[in-house]
Each structure stands twice: as C-alpha cells, then as structure tokens.
Image (cartoon, rainbow, N blue to C red; front, side):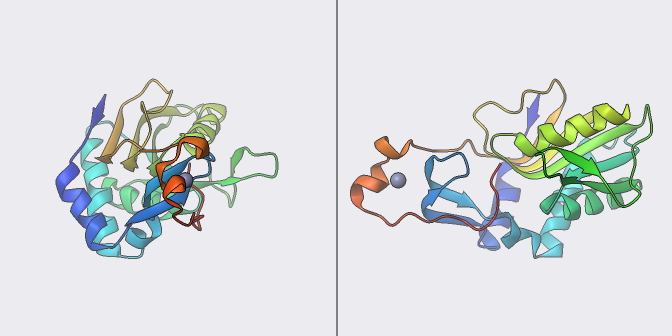
Length: 194
Ligand SMILES: [Zn+2]
C-alpha cells in the first residue's frame, strides 16, 4: 500500500530548491531531466522535521520500537522520526563488501518492531540492504517510510510503504535520451542515488 501527501511535501522540496531540473546521470546509468537533491532539504531542520512527522504519524499505531535508516540521509531521518515516536533512532552503515551493518553499539533486539526510513527511493538498493540487517537481527519490519518515492513500482518487500511524495522517475537510456540529442551537458550529481 502506498500513501502520499504530495502537494504539501512537494512544496517544501520546491521551497528548499531541492528539485533540480537539467540533464542528470543517475547511479543506474540512466539519464533524467529531474534530480531530487535530498540534502538541500535535509539542511533545513524545520522542513525535515515536518516530513519526518508525516512519516511518524502514518506509523503511529504500529508499536514501532526503533527507527533505522541507511547512512547518510537516513541518520537524520531516523533520528527525527524516532523523536516523534518517542523511540530509538539508529543507522546502518555500508561495509566494504556492499552490505550494511549496525556499528557504534547499535542493535535491534529479536522481535523488536522496526520502522525503516530513507530519503529518496529509486532502485531500493539501500532499503533492501537495511532490511537484510533487520532480518539478521530478528527484528520485525513495521513498515518503510521515505521522503520521495521515485521508483517505478515501489520496493520488492511485502510491507506498508509510505512516501511523503510519490513522483515516479522519468529516465532514459543514454541512446534514447532526448536531452543528449539536444546536446545538453550531462551533470553527475554529488550524492548517491538509490
Ligand atoms: Zn542524456
């Protein structure tokens, strides 16, 4: 089930200048005319807090005991969402072999109800990595909350997926990209998209 609150949340992103228009190279190798620069919004505590409140409210009756997100954006989102829910907020870091793990004394107890949060869902790679951590610890996934869902069809995990904004990605393979044909310069955004 996907829920959205598009207008209000989208305005926050627009006000923060977080929706960039141009010709972008995504991590997937595809080209896109739009790029969501999540840190442009995460730099404003007021906006970030409102979005996390939306996520927290959606899952307020799910007995969440801990909120976990992937580094880097997920650190901020897990903290702020957990603050609203009155529970722990932790983050999972990348390992050299491309998985995720809890460091710094963080843990998820067996049977604990876990809310997974992330900034922009595109391929769902980081979300799936964090989900593996939750499963390994024996945690129970209460749901997934993201700021922006840019995926074609959500994430391949059977749970409640909530997004503050649902905006399916417009992307082209380099050979079929109309922006390339126009000769627009290709921009590689700074952060990871995934
Ligand atoms: Zn292109």
